[in-house]
Length: 245
Image (cartoon, rainbow, N blue to C red):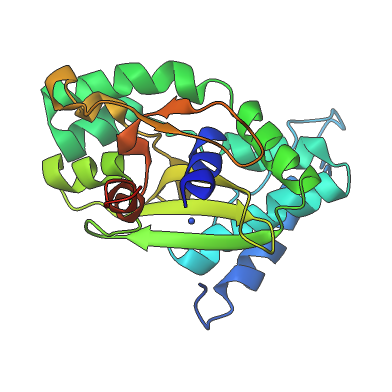
């Protein structure tokens, strides 16, 4: 339990029965095709190229699974350009507005300020997907939370505690078939027509609210490392604090 929790969180979570995932995949594949359409005006002078269709995914676990599969398939095909184009759509287009709407002006401003630098390099998220793929972490699991859950992290629980407007959070987990090693990416929200990465929102935790780090020894290592308890799923924190742990 200790090793699994650490490995899931140190790297950075079901599907519906409808066909919205396959439909989104077809539409987004067309949106990322490198096709240039040149319009001619009456004088035969090339005009502006038509804008590419927007990349969209439906607001469901299936939708986020499809997004994940699309990035992994692009990486498997050595199509880094397509993978990056999908990842770039994950950045919140107006962080100040979204955080302000859901947490109020004061806390929203803090979250938006912290979000900017983190969202600037979505290529790092693609690199995390690529590393997970290379490590054989092929099992995709999506978590969807509308309230605090034992499977949510401590920071996700703070979102539900302090949000002024309803919010739904999603997580992506990529694990090996034996579930011993994995990547955990969180939190995603659905805004507009597609998913956005809202980040870990650590600014929700004041210094006085932060518990002491716990030491966890990763599998295959001798030395323990300190882990932020709020990054752990709530059920794992309970397991670590159980007698004998």
